Image 1: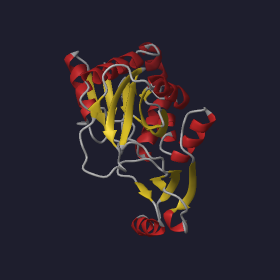
Image 2: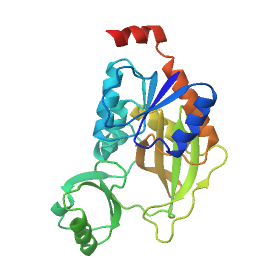
Image 3: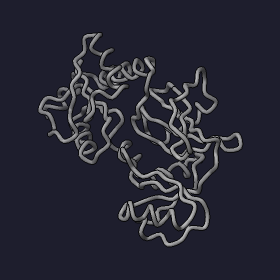
Image 4: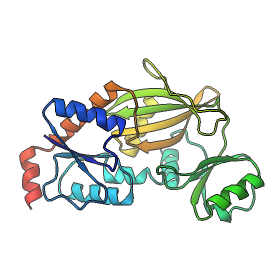
Amino acid sequence: MRIGLLTGNSVHPLLAAATGIWRADGHCVEQLHPDAVLPADPADVYLLKARTPAAIALARALEERGVPVLNSAAATEFCQDRIRMAHLAEAAGLPFPNTTAPGALRELTAIDRPLVVKSRRSRRDDLVARIDDLAQLHALAAAWPEEPVVLQDFVPGDGWDHKLWVVAGRVFAARRRSELAAGPKVPDVPVDGPHPWSDLALRVGEVFDLEVYGVDLLEVDGTPLIVDINAFPGIRGSVDAARVLAELAIRVSLTPDDHDRALHRQQ
């Protein structure tokens, strides 16, 4: 079996661990850079780790050739837009903070309550910050003047995020120090055993049509609040997650039938 990794970073911990499993089982693992052209002889399945426009366009072209992609190009692209994410979550009855899209930061002229400002487009090294007053707003606008953003009401928590990662219906969890919390960063704290909000994480996958994804949650007065959803996140230090991912890719590559897919590619 040939397994393709659509990524610019093949040493990503989750992918690296899964690659070791595939190769030990005799499978071939190939990297496809997001800026590459559509291969003449594609692999049997691709894992879409990159989320750039070029990567999504390449994934969509592969799908049009009949090649399965995890996650799909459409689902991955949808999760890049935080306002669309918020609207779908609200429509599906998922607990999500009130989210608005005012445009660029320079267009904001007032603030009457603590807010969380995020880049509208979710990506590596995007903007996530809390602002409490005009001085902070002006400083942030000076640093990110043209950045399209979304605003969410700041919800006080205990300084920790609940990170729930789902691979093929299996939930893995940890607690991580919040990006907005003061003090030094500390290592993730794994959560052993079933997580009380696993069913909510699985519901997210159904709503957003995702197989490999992460859900960031806050606990507010004993109830969960979803603050972000990520297609194909990193899951560090979990051999079980890598094994489930490896099995998922093999299973997906065999559906539809190999012969039918080969005929489709030749058309």
